[in-house]
Length: 379
Image (tube, rainbow, N blue to C red; front, side, top):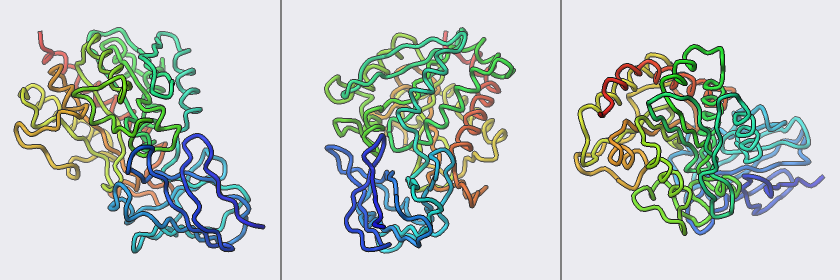
């Protein structure tokens, strides 16, 4: 039987270069109107019990070549449980995945996908919970809704938003965990958070890129996390609608949820370098980071991005723009595509479930700093 490779489905991405028996050469397709690529997701059929070698041959030119060393591909037989392919090797610009599929239909991806169908199921389930409001903030370029869920009735205005970069699917797994916790009527932490805060949650800011199988951009080939200084309806309506809603509501605390290809750790990036940075903002960011590190062994503060020098923040990014615009505490949470090397899992690596656990820890940390956040709230 000839092997079959397909990716013509929600979030799919791969191009077949050549199939020679059990040897397959593949290429990742670039984002539309962009040179970014790294996300892959495809189905392999007809290979049950065969020793198959899959070679992705264009890794050198990908967005983050340093993301390939030590990386292990994700495999599923049911699109629910995703394990790592131990025999994944990167050398000379080629990612080689050696496997013997247990069934005639298996799925491989850069990380466990979070499809738009699952997104719709999540939004529908959460919007149906008591005390949850739903709003479409606007439409994407492909005509999809920018879904926003409102939870809680407190004075503190909290925004959680994810998947500006659609290939970072762990971000929406985090969102699923956060929303499940916030809607748990028996969780004492969530009960207090809903009393003290009003949450506005955008689980997926880039539905077009998600459905198209992009790594980093929307339908126009635009990186949304470089649009926050001047979003436009023509190029970045997703940011425009969300930022307009933030202007209407105000922001006291915000988390932008992402994934990092290269760094094998969970970490936060802040707003250092913005023009109007205050001691109040930096103290609250530090308190939250330290609280989260105490609560979750999966979080650390040693590895991360280089901190911007005073006055040199990139103001086109959401975290810096929000901190400057609203005087709030804002941050970017980065999770690994590989694993948390301080606490590795050889079977699953970093996974959907661990992303959800980290979301719960982040909400616990927010609860832990509520007194500081309330006391430091500008009058």
